[in-house]
Image (tube, rainbow, N blue to C red; front, top):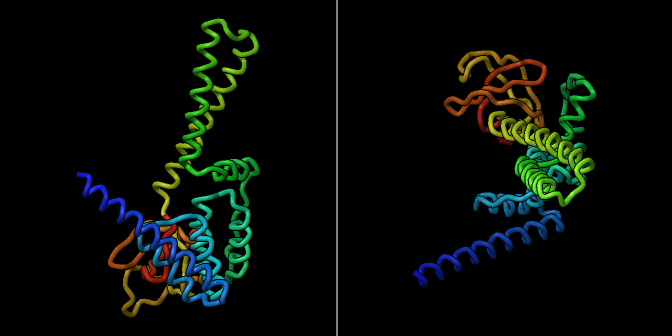
Length: 248
């Protein structure tokens, strides 16, 4: 048993060292403007199943410097999903999106809806549920101390009610974030001038429209290496899987 544990720990240690070597080599390649090499090193890390906000951020920088706008938007978006409060990632993502050709105008939402979306995206799902747990523990402690008459009833009764309401609101946002991440599939177009077809085949079928690199699309179905996509303006159609990279 100890022998097997030792082998396992050595394997984990070797894997960590390998990942660290790839990461440092990728960073060094970017400093030397060897962007293809940097991309290769970072992608090797992802192939091991490891991901982090910093890794995707550096990968996005390498793609952007290499004029792969669609893939840079994909990498920056993945980075932001892991660390939604990183201002550097937000800034670079906005710069990359500004280079998307024929951008689709987003429909204007109500101010309250925008504020709610910004609030929901401020924390990742696990952080929202961690906040819920903390609020629950604090509320229970206050309730116990009120029951034991350790705290002043009038003041802390109001605080307890406030915490209960805040906890319910945090739970609502947490579940909304979970459902949004679990059931909403999206992807980024990573090739330019991608033809979108009415069916998952080409044959002699004329494309419905063309879509440009860097556009974020919803994905509702997959079939025979094709994916059915939808745009925010309501357009739908099928594209080859090689022309998109999934965000979630």
